[in-house]
Each structure stands twice: as structure tokens, then as C-alpha cells.
Length: 262
Ligand code: 23J
Ligand code: MN
Image (cartoon, rainbow, N blue to C red; front, side, top):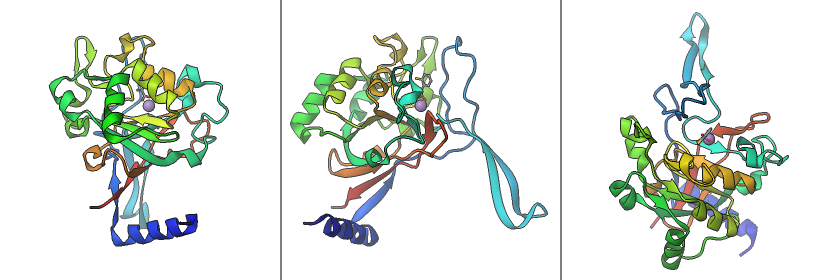
């Protein structure tokens, strides 16, 4: 089949609902959880603010609009390579310079929801990914890989950030997991937690391996994804596009998955 036949068929499938568009995005607003870093990093991302300019009133009789206070790394969001020191030298590592061709790609959804329900510090390893591949098929070059933990069900609860005296507790990848995925030449790695790394990843070697290693290799991160329970292990396409912020290190996204029905 030619590329134009495939795109026409996809268009028809989208219009008919044969391909469902699943929203993998959380609501962005004042209640959106924001990452809390250790106290030595005292300058935080502020909470999201939405300020009304007008809503069919004296400040705008025919129109409603708002302005916002919004950190790049807020809510369901994208980490660009320039976010981490290991990715600092990529001229195409910013939200306004990256290659958009890479953003639309097949997605591998690794279901870790049962393990994460049992263990809030569950870590996905390279061996865990290889076992998943043995069951579902190989992860291919240019593809997204996302870790399903159903952590989106915790948004609005203390259990989302899940912090105690030892810091945050949330699932994530080990360094060898990310190194293995990079050896498969993935485009990026996504999670349903506040960041791409596990809550306790500050103590790993290297610290924050998802950030350190993904961005070292000019790859992307996705955080606070939702609705991964609606994705198949393989067979969907993920569109995860940041705003074209000048010299941006990340951006809230509207993450959309194209999922074949039936
Ligand atoms: C800054 C410093 C450490 C981390 C993060 C940001 C994130 O998780 C993020 O949103 O990229 S771990
Ligand atoms: Mn981020």
C-alpha cells in the first residue's frame, strides 16, 4: 500500500471512530501537582495560575480569555534534551529546535500497574523490559516507551507525590533499563508520575538516570501521562508535541494516542 493510501485510510478510520484518539493528558490548572525538589534547590516551579482577562463583561464584551503563570515542567509535560546538563550541547535539543518528525511514533506500553500497586518504589529493569519484549515483541528504533503504573488515579491525592521523611516514593526505571532502551534507539520514555525518574532516583548512579541518560543521547522524556490503561501493549501511535517555546527546556503537552479499536 502506498503512503497516500495509508494516510487516507487512517483519516477515514479517525473520522469513523475505527481509530480512537485517547487523551493521555491531565488537566492543567491550579490543582496540578508540581514537582518538589530537595530543599537545596530552593527555587521551585510555581503552581499553575489562570487569570481571567475577560468573560463577556466590561473588560471584553464579546470575548473570554485568560493569561497564565506556567512553568515549563508542569503537569503532563515534555522534557527536551537541554533540560539536563548531559544534553546541553545539542543545538536541536530545545523545544523550538527539535525535529518534529520524531514526536509522532509507535508507542510501547509496558504495564507495571500490578507491581506498582504492591510496591510504590517499583523499578523497571532492563531484564523486565526484555521479559516484556519476549511476550509482546521487540521495541523498535524511533519508538516511544511508556511505563503504565496507573499513577494518574492518584492525582489530587497526597499519594501522587507520595512524599515522606525520605522524599518521594513513586515507580520508575533503573539506569540499566534506560541504557537498554537507548540501545534500541527509542525516541523517548514516558511515565505517569510527576517526573520521568522514580521518586528515589536521586540516590541512583547516575542520579536521575532517566534524565541523565535520555538527554545525553538527545532523547525525550514525558511525565504525568494519563489513561495508559486504555493503550494496547503495542499497536498505538503516540503524538507528544511541546509548545515551540524559544530556547525551551520542556513544555506542557496534549499527549494523544491513536488506538485501533477492536
Ligand atoms: C528538575 C530537576 C530534577 C527533576 C526535574 C526537574 C523533573 O523531574 C522534570 O520535571 O523534568 S527530577
Ligand atoms: Mn520535566
